[in-house]
Image: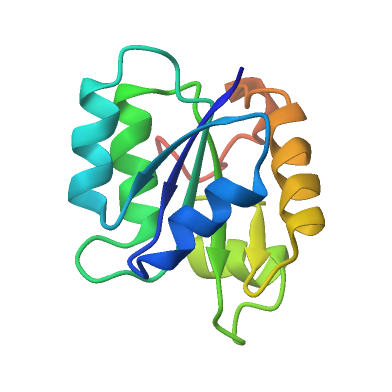
Length: 139
């Protein structure tokens, strides 16, 4: 059974997502600090971080960066309700350091969430060989 850490500062969201995602072990947190504590104390693998992008305190992007130091194999799916983020391309442009970061827009249906989670979990891990070399590095 795959484990998903769901982080959103709106209290009903993590519980609702847990109900929507049948067949997964769900861990929930209401902020980045709580998510870090859970991830640090959780013994098993966390396969996916499903986090809101904008939260008080550290953002979802900052949380993902911090947790990936502990769990580099963990995949990340961002969720947001902001209209400015209308798709994966715009989010990756805004995030810069996360090209192609997967995003699901709120509100979403149970079917759409399940589909997106399966899609992200099925992706192969990133390899440093997948990135094009930066011609300006080490100049």
